[in-house]
Image 1: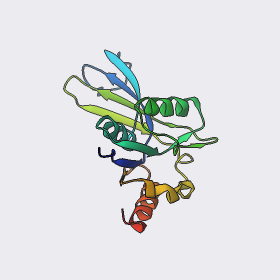
Image 2 (image 1 turned 120 degrees about the vertical axis):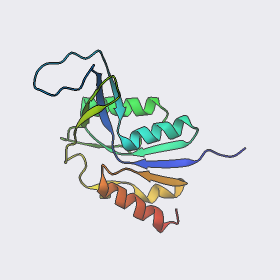
Image 3 (image 1 turned 60 degrees about the horizontal axis):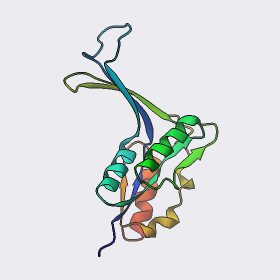
Image 4 (image 1 turned 45 degrees about the horizontal axis):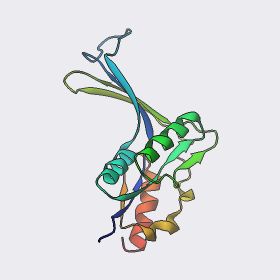
Length: 158
């Protein structure tokens, strides 16, 4: 039997608050959502969860604040079966958040917040462990970490 592909996903880990509205606001005011949900997301994190659901063995390299939102994010991704042992928790940083409004036609407005402190110093990532992975996927949200991971992968022929 073949072993599952081992994938490393590098980048965003964000708590998305998704609110369904009839129409997107065009003026100031208070608008009542028809539905809402909060999920652990982000481009790299969502890709990691999708790959895991398809049978890959996936680890996530991401950065989060050492806060309750970070706890919620890690728990949400781990619940999907993704290894979060490489998720770096940064003391004093705030974890990433997004407010997303989606109308009945699927049009959306996304307002993200990323604390620069949480995304600093990608050199702290454990690049020596890349030999365990068959493939590396990166997103554009943490360019320093993406460049570091891709250079390390190339150096070992991945």
